[in-house]
Image 1 (tube, helix red, strand yellow):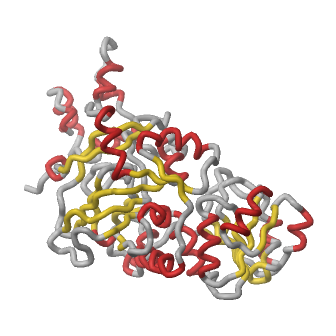
Image 2 (cartoon, one colour; image 1 turned 135 degrees about the horizontal axis):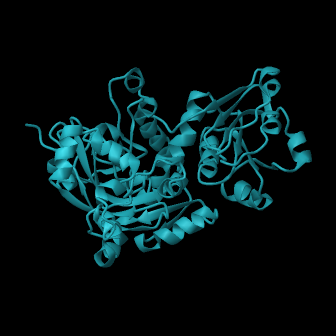
Image 3 (spheres, one colour; image 1 turned 180 degrees about the vertical axis):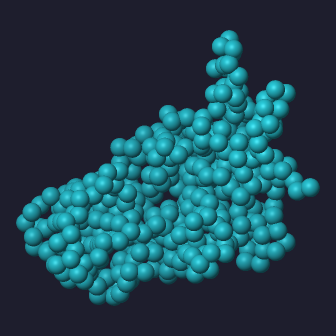
Length: 419
């Protein structure tokens, strides 16, 4: 008989977890699966904080599964490998990005686009193949199939390279696949934040002319003098926008704000391309004439495949491309989230997991069973705590039961905790 998920998850670890939509993070004792034949066991040293982590812990996308351990910009060292692993050995410097598995057999996977697989398993907050919920990199260690681990070049510091596993591949992949990586081309980068500042650096690494488009005039000096951009346009300045009309071969749009698209499309040359990597909350208004009249393209892009991620890191090492970061301790993570919500970071927070997580966990780790809080809420009400489970968790549990009879038996015997 095959071992259950609980029997396979025997490795003790600690993570920074959100328990509800308040998004407050605190240490939580968790488990990781035992080493499979194709697995790599990684001691996490650093993990970047992506803006999507903030959205996730706050349940902004209405898909949160609590307790949630976020983080998909993971760097560290290999502690152990499975018997079939050939790419890595103990002590290797490695990274894990936005996904930890996929079907590995569909057309997308076979072409190296695991990020487009319908069976993609994100690094956190989704049901894994064994039925458990994935936990991310705000934790002490992780076990990952070797296909979804990348080797970190020795010349890239693990802390400065961590954000490349999300922000880096997010801008690199569309630049490559839409032909916006040719020396001498003119690239526009809309937005100068966590994604935008890395896009500027890759644009220059490709030998392109790079113009930053921002609503913040105060970022001009930063863009030109520190990041190496060739020009800077204030998006709200009509004269500057008009002067740049029809000059760009492509634009990487990194912003999540809803802004008028027609003026931005006007910056493109005929046959120019705008690639969306930011995610505005509301639908965009796109005048068809702005695309059709001069044969322009508006496209989207979601991270990138594993082959491209390794290629991106190797190029970054060659051209000294890293993220601009602020390293923080685990005890500071909630303050960092508050600052991130106010865009008060230049440009990415990175948690020093290796040096600070254990210390933070030593005094505040929450070892309660996930259902303990439901017991407390149900006390004195006469209700079965099982009825207080969130719908998505209840649906997940039901999916592993053979039928109503099994569920009724389980509930009557008060064994529902063991489901």
